[in-house]
Amino acid sequence: MWLDFYMFLTLASGIALAVLGWQLCSIHIPHREDTHRLRTARAILAASYFILAIPAFCELFNGGEADRKIIAVFTIAVAAYQSLLFTVTLLTFIQPLYVTCHRVRIQAGIVTVAVALFLFMALTSEECWVFFVALAVYAVQLVCYTLLFRRKYAECLRLLEEYYDEDQHARLRWTKFGFYAALSVGIAASLSVWLPPVAYNIFTVGYILFYGWFAGRFCNYVVKINYYLPAVTQGQEPIRLQAVDMAACGLSEPELATEKEHLRLALERWVAERRFTRPEEGREQIARELGTTKEFLCWYFKNEIGRDFRPWRVGLRIEYAKQLLAEELGISMNDLARKVGFATKSNFYGYFKKLTGETPVEYQRRIVSQC
Image (cartoon, rainbow, N blue to C red; front, side):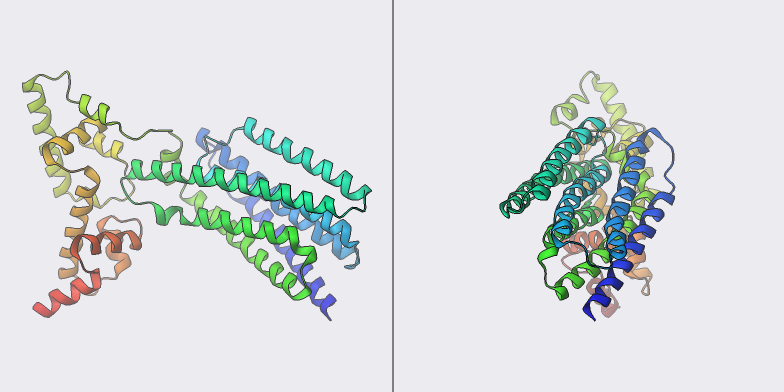
Protein backbone atom coordinates (compact mmCIF):
# COMPACT_ATOMS: atom_id res chain seq x y z
CA MET A 1 0.00 0.00 0.00
CA TRP A 2 2.80 2.41 0.93
CA LEU A 3 4.63 1.54 -2.26
CA ASP A 4 1.55 2.36 -4.33
CA PHE A 5 1.21 5.78 -2.68
CA TYR A 6 4.95 6.37 -2.99
CA MET A 7 4.85 5.56 -6.71
CA PHE A 8 1.84 7.83 -7.15
CA LEU A 9 3.72 10.72 -5.51
CA THR A 10 6.79 9.96 -7.62
CA LEU A 11 4.69 10.08 -10.79
CA ALA A 12 2.95 13.29 -9.66
CA SER A 13 6.24 14.99 -8.80
CA GLY A 14 7.84 14.03 -12.12
CA ILE A 15 4.89 15.30 -14.16
CA ALA A 16 4.55 18.49 -12.09
CA LEU A 17 8.24 19.35 -12.39
CA ALA A 18 8.28 18.68 -16.14
CA VAL A 19 5.18 20.84 -16.69
CA LEU A 20 6.61 23.66 -14.55
CA GLY A 21 9.86 23.45 -16.51
CA TRP A 22 8.00 23.88 -19.81
CA GLN A 23 6.00 26.72 -18.29
CA LEU A 24 9.22 28.52 -17.37
CA CYS A 25 10.53 28.03 -20.91
CA SER A 26 7.40 29.68 -22.29
CA ILE A 27 7.65 32.84 -20.17
CA HIS A 28 8.29 35.84 -22.42
CA ILE A 29 11.13 38.11 -21.34
CA PRO A 30 11.80 41.22 -23.48
CA HIS A 31 15.03 41.01 -25.48
CA ARG A 32 16.98 43.92 -24.03
CA GLU A 33 20.54 44.32 -22.86
CA ASP A 34 19.49 44.57 -19.21
CA THR A 35 17.41 41.36 -19.37
CA HIS A 36 20.14 39.11 -20.77
CA ARG A 37 21.01 37.65 -17.36
CA LEU A 38 17.35 37.14 -16.53
CA ARG A 39 16.84 35.12 -19.72
CA THR A 40 19.85 33.03 -18.76
CA ALA A 41 18.40 32.55 -15.27
CA ARG A 42 15.15 31.35 -16.84
CA ALA A 43 17.05 28.71 -18.81
CA ILE A 44 18.98 27.65 -15.71
CA LEU A 45 15.82 27.43 -13.63
CA ALA A 46 13.96 25.43 -16.28
CA ALA A 47 16.93 23.05 -16.51
CA SER A 48 16.77 22.64 -12.73
CA TYR A 49 13.16 21.52 -12.93
CA PHE A 50 13.90 19.03 -15.71
CA ILE A 51 16.91 17.67 -13.79
CA LEU A 52 14.68 17.06 -10.79
CA ALA A 53 12.04 15.35 -12.92
CA ILE A 54 14.47 12.83 -14.46
CA PRO A 55 15.17 10.80 -11.27
CA ALA A 56 11.44 10.53 -10.62
CA PHE A 57 10.79 8.99 -14.04
CA CYS A 58 13.84 6.73 -13.72
CA GLU A 59 12.51 5.36 -10.45
CA LEU A 60 9.10 4.76 -12.04
CA PHE A 61 10.72 2.70 -14.80
CA ASN A 62 12.50 0.64 -12.13
CA GLY A 63 9.25 0.05 -10.30
CA GLY A 64 10.53 1.67 -7.12
CA GLU A 65 13.13 -1.11 -6.71
CA ALA A 66 16.25 0.95 -7.38
CA ASP A 67 19.33 0.40 -5.21
CA ARG A 68 19.01 2.68 -2.15
CA LYS A 69 22.72 3.40 -2.24
CA ILE A 70 22.52 4.57 -5.85
CA ILE A 71 19.56 6.78 -4.95
CA ALA A 72 21.44 8.27 -1.98
CA VAL A 73 24.52 8.99 -4.10
CA PHE A 74 22.66 10.75 -6.88
CA THR A 75 20.35 12.57 -4.45
CA ILE A 76 23.33 14.26 -2.80
CA ALA A 77 24.92 15.03 -6.18
CA VAL A 78 21.70 16.57 -7.53
CA ALA A 79 21.22 18.55 -4.29
CA ALA A 80 24.65 20.16 -4.74
CA TYR A 81 23.80 21.28 -8.28
CA GLN A 82 20.32 22.42 -7.29
CA SER A 83 21.77 24.63 -4.55
CA LEU A 84 24.07 26.25 -7.09
CA LEU A 85 21.34 26.76 -9.69
CA PHE A 86 18.78 28.22 -7.29
CA THR A 87 21.35 30.52 -5.70
CA VAL A 88 22.38 31.81 -9.14
CA THR A 89 18.72 32.37 -10.06
CA LEU A 90 17.90 34.28 -6.87
CA LEU A 91 21.07 36.37 -7.14
CA THR A 92 20.04 37.25 -10.69
CA PHE A 93 16.78 38.62 -9.27
CA ILE A 94 18.41 40.83 -6.66
CA GLN A 95 21.92 41.59 -8.01
CA PRO A 96 22.05 40.78 -11.75
CA LEU A 97 25.32 42.66 -12.27
CA TYR A 98 27.04 40.33 -9.81
CA VAL A 99 26.07 37.18 -11.73
CA THR A 100 28.69 36.98 -14.48
CA CYS A 101 29.60 34.03 -16.70
CA HIS A 102 33.05 33.94 -15.09
CA ARG A 103 31.64 33.59 -11.57
CA VAL A 104 29.08 30.98 -12.61
CA ARG A 105 31.73 28.92 -14.43
CA ILE A 106 34.01 28.95 -11.39
CA GLN A 107 31.22 27.83 -9.06
CA ALA A 108 29.98 25.21 -11.51
CA GLY A 109 33.54 23.92 -11.92
CA ILE A 110 34.04 23.60 -8.17
CA VAL A 111 30.73 21.75 -7.74
CA THR A 112 31.45 19.48 -10.72
CA VAL A 113 34.88 18.47 -9.42
CA ALA A 114 33.48 17.81 -5.94
CA VAL A 115 30.53 15.80 -7.30
CA ALA A 116 32.75 13.76 -9.64
CA LEU A 117 35.10 12.89 -6.79
CA PHE A 118 32.16 11.95 -4.56
CA LEU A 119 30.57 9.75 -7.26
CA PHE A 120 33.83 7.90 -7.82
CA MET A 121 34.44 7.32 -4.11
CA ALA A 122 30.83 6.42 -3.28
CA LEU A 123 30.29 4.02 -6.18
CA THR A 124 33.60 2.20 -5.80
CA SER A 125 33.70 1.96 -2.04
CA GLU A 126 31.52 0.53 0.70
CA GLU A 127 32.80 2.98 3.32
CA CYS A 128 30.07 4.98 5.09
CA TRP A 129 32.42 7.86 5.88
CA VAL A 130 32.26 8.93 2.22
CA PHE A 131 28.63 9.96 2.70
CA PHE A 132 29.35 11.82 5.93
CA VAL A 133 32.18 13.76 4.29
CA ALA A 134 29.95 14.55 1.30
CA LEU A 135 27.18 15.83 3.58
CA ALA A 136 29.71 17.96 5.49
CA VAL A 137 31.02 19.48 2.24
CA TYR A 138 27.43 20.09 1.13
CA ALA A 139 26.76 21.87 4.43
CA VAL A 140 29.79 24.12 3.81
CA GLN A 141 28.44 24.88 0.33
CA LEU A 142 25.08 25.92 1.80
CA VAL A 143 26.72 28.11 4.44
CA CYS A 144 28.80 29.91 1.79
CA TYR A 145 25.76 30.48 -0.41
CA THR A 146 23.74 31.72 2.57
CA LEU A 147 26.38 34.29 3.54
CA LEU A 148 26.63 35.45 -0.08
CA PHE A 149 22.86 35.75 -0.45
CA ARG A 150 22.49 37.70 2.81
CA ARG A 151 25.13 40.20 1.68
CA LYS A 152 23.65 40.67 -1.78
CA TYR A 153 20.13 40.88 -0.39
CA ALA A 154 21.20 43.78 1.85
CA GLU A 155 22.81 45.52 -1.14
CA CYS A 156 19.68 45.07 -3.25
CA LEU A 157 17.49 46.43 -0.47
CA ARG A 158 19.74 49.49 -0.18
CA LEU A 159 19.67 50.11 -3.94
CA LEU A 160 15.88 49.84 -4.16
CA GLU A 161 15.32 52.11 -1.16
CA GLU A 162 17.85 54.63 -2.45
CA TYR A 163 16.25 54.61 -5.91
CA TYR A 164 12.59 54.75 -4.85
CA ASP A 165 12.92 56.48 -1.46
CA GLU A 166 10.55 53.99 0.13
CA ASP A 167 10.76 50.99 2.43
CA GLN A 168 11.23 47.95 0.16
CA HIS A 169 11.28 45.10 2.70
CA ALA A 170 7.79 43.94 1.71
CA ARG A 171 8.67 43.82 -2.00
CA LEU A 172 11.83 41.77 -1.41
CA ARG A 173 10.55 39.49 1.33
CA TRP A 174 9.61 36.77 -1.15
CA THR A 175 13.21 36.41 -2.35
CA LYS A 176 14.42 35.83 1.20
CA PHE A 177 11.63 33.33 1.82
CA GLY A 178 12.39 31.62 -1.50
CA PHE A 179 16.08 31.28 -0.67
CA TYR A 180 15.56 29.82 2.78
CA ALA A 181 12.77 27.55 1.53
CA ALA A 182 15.07 26.25 -1.22
CA LEU A 183 17.78 25.83 1.41
CA SER A 184 15.43 23.76 3.57
CA VAL A 185 14.35 21.65 0.59
CA GLY A 186 18.00 21.00 -0.29
CA ILE A 187 18.86 19.89 3.24
CA ALA A 188 15.80 17.64 3.42
CA ALA A 189 16.54 16.22 -0.04
CA SER A 190 20.11 15.31 0.90
CA LEU A 191 18.75 13.32 3.86
CA SER A 192 15.57 12.06 2.19
CA VAL A 193 16.84 8.52 1.57
CA TRP A 194 17.12 7.98 5.32
CA LEU A 195 13.68 9.43 6.13
CA PRO A 196 10.85 7.10 7.21
CA PRO A 197 8.15 6.54 4.54
CA VAL A 198 5.59 8.96 6.02
CA ALA A 199 8.15 11.74 6.43
CA TYR A 200 9.43 11.15 2.90
CA ASN A 201 5.92 11.44 1.44
CA ILE A 202 5.33 14.68 3.36
CA PHE A 203 8.65 16.02 2.07
CA THR A 204 7.71 15.11 -1.52
CA VAL A 205 4.40 16.97 -1.28
CA GLY A 206 6.17 19.95 0.29
CA TYR A 207 8.82 20.28 -2.38
CA ILE A 208 6.25 19.97 -5.20
CA LEU A 209 4.33 22.86 -3.62
CA PHE A 210 7.53 24.87 -3.21
CA TYR A 211 8.64 24.44 -6.82
CA GLY A 212 5.16 25.40 -8.02
CA TRP A 213 5.23 28.52 -5.84
CA PHE A 214 8.72 29.45 -7.05
CA ALA A 215 7.74 29.15 -10.71
CA GLY A 216 4.81 31.48 -10.00
CA ARG A 217 7.09 34.00 -8.29
CA PHE A 218 9.40 33.96 -11.30
CA CYS A 219 6.43 34.85 -13.52
CA ASN A 220 5.49 37.71 -11.18
CA TYR A 221 9.06 38.99 -11.16
CA VAL A 222 9.17 39.10 -14.96
CA VAL A 223 5.95 41.16 -14.97
CA LYS A 224 7.63 43.70 -12.64
CA ILE A 225 11.13 43.77 -14.15
CA ASN A 226 10.74 47.43 -15.12
CA TYR A 227 10.40 48.21 -11.42
CA TYR A 228 13.39 46.20 -10.18
CA LEU A 229 15.96 46.43 -12.98
CA PRO A 230 16.44 50.23 -13.15
CA ALA A 231 17.41 50.24 -9.47
CA VAL A 232 19.65 47.17 -9.36
CA THR A 233 21.40 47.40 -12.75
CA GLN A 234 22.77 50.94 -12.46
CA GLY A 235 25.16 50.01 -9.68
CA GLN A 236 24.47 53.36 -8.06
CA GLU A 237 25.98 54.33 -4.72
CA PRO A 238 24.23 56.19 -1.92
CA ILE A 239 24.21 59.94 -2.34
CA ARG A 240 27.39 61.12 -0.66
CA LEU A 241 27.21 64.06 1.72
CA GLN A 242 30.19 65.64 -0.02
CA ALA A 243 28.37 65.54 -3.36
CA VAL A 244 25.30 67.08 -1.75
CA ASP A 245 27.34 69.87 -0.16
CA MET A 246 29.14 70.51 -3.46
CA ALA A 247 25.85 70.80 -5.37
CA ALA A 248 25.56 74.50 -4.57
CA CYS A 249 29.26 75.25 -5.04
CA GLY A 250 30.22 77.13 -8.17
CA LEU A 251 27.01 79.15 -8.07
CA SER A 252 27.06 82.83 -7.30
CA GLU A 253 24.61 84.19 -4.74
CA PRO A 254 22.15 85.41 -7.41
CA GLU A 255 22.40 82.08 -9.25
CA LEU A 256 21.86 80.11 -6.06
CA ALA A 257 18.86 82.25 -5.15
CA THR A 258 17.43 81.74 -8.64
CA GLU A 259 17.94 77.96 -8.43
CA LYS A 260 16.30 77.81 -5.01
CA GLU A 261 13.31 79.86 -6.14
CA HIS A 262 12.92 77.75 -9.27
CA LEU A 263 12.94 74.57 -7.20
CA ARG A 264 10.55 76.00 -4.61
CA LEU A 265 7.99 76.84 -7.30
CA ALA A 266 8.50 73.49 -9.02
CA LEU A 267 7.90 71.69 -5.72
CA GLU A 268 4.73 73.69 -5.13
CA ARG A 269 3.41 72.60 -8.54
CA TRP A 270 4.55 69.04 -7.88
CA VAL A 271 2.59 68.97 -4.61
CA ALA A 272 -0.47 70.71 -6.09
CA GLU A 273 -0.63 68.10 -8.86
CA ARG A 274 -0.26 65.35 -6.23
CA ARG A 275 2.66 63.80 -8.05
CA PHE A 276 3.84 62.52 -4.68
CA THR A 277 1.22 59.75 -5.07
CA ARG A 278 3.19 58.04 -7.85
CA PRO A 279 4.86 55.08 -6.14
CA GLU A 280 7.37 53.89 -8.72
CA GLU A 281 9.44 57.02 -9.27
CA GLY A 282 13.05 57.27 -8.20
CA ARG A 283 14.59 60.43 -6.80
CA GLU A 284 16.62 60.97 -9.96
CA GLN A 285 13.50 60.88 -12.11
CA ILE A 286 11.72 63.28 -9.75
CA ALA A 287 14.69 65.65 -9.86
CA ARG A 288 14.52 65.71 -13.66
CA GLU A 289 10.80 66.51 -13.51
CA LEU A 290 11.58 69.38 -11.15
CA GLY A 291 14.26 70.73 -13.50
CA THR A 292 17.20 70.12 -11.17
CA THR A 293 19.71 67.45 -10.21
CA LYS A 294 19.45 64.77 -7.55
CA GLU A 295 22.34 66.35 -5.63
CA PHE A 296 20.84 69.85 -5.63
CA LEU A 297 17.47 68.44 -4.60
CA CYS A 298 19.13 66.79 -1.60
CA TRP A 299 21.04 69.99 -0.80
CA TYR A 300 17.83 72.02 -0.93
CA PHE A 301 15.98 69.72 1.47
CA LYS A 302 18.95 69.53 3.82
CA ASN A 303 19.57 73.28 3.98
CA GLU A 304 16.23 74.93 3.19
CA ILE A 305 13.64 72.49 4.54
CA GLY A 306 15.72 70.80 7.23
CA ARG A 307 14.67 67.23 6.48
CA ASP A 308 15.26 64.57 3.86
CA PHE A 309 13.07 64.26 0.79
CA ARG A 310 11.85 60.79 1.72
CA PRO A 311 10.15 61.59 5.08
CA TRP A 312 8.84 64.84 3.57
CA ARG A 313 7.09 62.92 0.79
CA VAL A 314 5.80 60.33 3.26
CA GLY A 315 4.29 63.16 5.29
CA LEU A 316 2.47 64.46 2.21
CA ARG A 317 1.08 61.01 1.51
CA ILE A 318 -0.15 60.55 5.07
CA GLU A 319 -1.84 63.96 5.08
CA TYR A 320 -3.56 63.09 1.81
CA ALA A 321 -4.61 59.75 3.30
CA LYS A 322 -6.16 61.54 6.28
CA GLN A 323 -8.08 63.75 3.86
CA LEU A 324 -9.39 60.73 1.93
CA LEU A 325 -10.37 58.92 5.13
CA ALA A 326 -12.53 61.90 6.05
CA GLU A 327 -14.08 62.22 2.59
CA GLU A 328 -14.48 58.59 1.49
CA LEU A 329 -15.79 56.60 4.44
CA GLY A 330 -16.20 53.36 2.49
CA ILE A 331 -12.72 53.28 0.97
CA SER A 332 -10.78 50.04 1.44
CA MET A 333 -7.32 50.19 2.97
CA ASN A 334 -5.76 48.59 -0.12
CA ASP A 335 -7.29 51.24 -2.38
CA LEU A 336 -6.29 53.97 0.05
CA ALA A 337 -2.66 52.82 0.19
CA ARG A 338 -2.50 52.70 -3.61
CA LYS A 339 -4.19 56.10 -4.05
CA VAL A 340 -1.76 57.92 -1.80
CA GLY A 341 1.31 56.33 -3.39
CA PHE A 342 2.39 53.39 -1.23
CA ALA A 343 3.43 50.24 -3.05
CA THR A 344 2.20 47.98 -0.24
CA LYS A 345 -0.49 48.19 2.43
CA SER A 346 2.01 47.20 5.12
CA ASN A 347 4.23 50.21 4.33
CA PHE A 348 1.18 52.48 4.45
CA TYR A 349 0.01 51.10 7.80
CA GLY A 350 3.48 51.39 9.30
CA TYR A 351 4.03 55.01 8.28
CA PHE A 352 0.47 56.07 9.16
CA LYS A 353 0.72 54.71 12.70
CA LYS A 354 4.22 56.14 13.12
CA LEU A 355 3.13 59.67 12.15
CA THR A 356 -0.36 59.76 13.68
CA GLY A 357 -0.15 57.28 16.55
CA GLU A 358 -3.22 55.49 15.16
CA THR A 359 -3.99 52.94 12.48
CA PRO A 360 -5.98 54.25 9.49
CA VAL A 361 -9.09 52.42 10.75
CA GLU A 362 -8.72 53.89 14.26
CA TYR A 363 -8.22 57.36 12.80
CA GLN A 364 -11.32 57.08 10.62
CA ARG A 365 -13.46 55.85 13.51
CA ARG A 366 -12.32 58.74 15.67
CA ILE A 367 -13.07 61.46 13.13
CA VAL A 368 -16.45 59.88 12.31
CA SER A 369 -17.39 59.83 16.00
CA GLN A 370 -16.50 63.52 16.28
CA CYS A 371 -18.87 64.52 13.47
